[in-house]
Image (cartoon, rainbow, N blue to C red; front, side, top):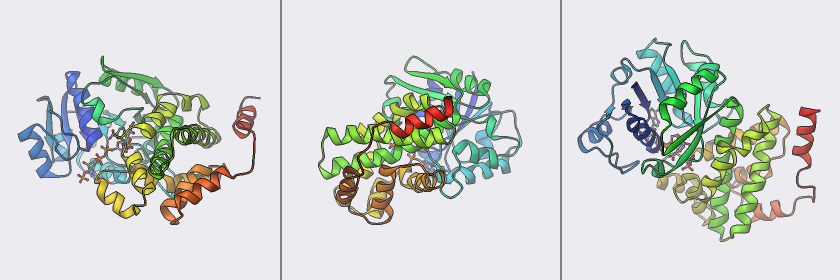
Length: 345
Ligand SMILES: NC(=O)C1=CN([C@@H]2O[C@H](COP(=O)(O)OP(=O)(O)OC[C@H]3O[C@@H](n4cnc5c(N)ncnc54)[C@H](OP(=O)(O)O)[C@@H]3O)[C@@H](O)[C@H]2O)C=CC1
Ligand SMILES: O=C(CO)COP(=O)(O)O
């Protein structure tokens, strides 16, 4: 059994620690808040983020150096905006480059347009992008912590590292697949949050299941369009971190992105919504990156563009729905089919 550090004691870091503890590993859950580490160790609960019983194999740490002592793997699970800072803190306390680095964060950095494995590869001394593993898929922390059946995918350019991650996490309630397409896996996980915001807005406006199915399906089309144009395997978007995560995030009340969208659809202001959520809503930041990506790649992403306009240009969501419904008539699969023809002919 291994010693593993999980960095980020939010809901997902806590749930993944529980999976690792169930597999018999010695887990060090690191938080940047001393009082939270103390609360977890004393009460065996992480009240604010995931209020379930925390197994005794998990110890919470606020000292990063202590948390990393003799670990064979590090799982990074902080929000995208904290990734670079946490990697820099890692550099200050360890020079060990034999540790398997796994991340479970879903986002793309605005301006640089980097995926999380690229950001970690840039920041972490002794590591390259190809060393990093991503874990992604339809997996709400609340259900994982209750050991409800969940399936995810791990991916790395170095597939051997993905297999190490698969072995660390897999158990009878948490099934882990591998994939060689880290580009598709990371893009799918990040971009679905934007569509989930849209699904929440649609529900908040009072639209029904037809509208949500349309958002999921046409959202998947634009995710696949951008991803394929960037070189991802189009089949990845039909997998767990693609359509699987899109479905779970667009339809579950556990989703923070859906819930934030729902409040926006009901007329609340973005700043108030984010304050009320108190947890990360990754889609809000990722939509900036995707909007920029779509322009640079000259890929049509009308839903993403509409959500960007609601969030950052104060557009009325109802006007955006009208805008989407009145676009020029077209064939359903034409541009994705063209991209695939170019790729495979
Ligand atoms: N929740 C879920 O079900 C799933 C989440 N994810 C992804 O996992 C990532 C993390 O999400 P989640 O755990 O849910 O988020 P939460 O909002 O629940 O928790 C985020 C945690 O990260 C900590 N944090 C923020 N900034 C820093 C920093 N600079 N240094 C150290 N710690 C920091 C927060 O601390 P503080 O208390 O100070 O804010 C908090 O403990 C996201 O990318 C999300 O998309 C993926 C799959 C499932
Ligand atoms: O990624 C998730 C489930 O797979 C969690 O989504 P939210 O961040 O919207 O809660």
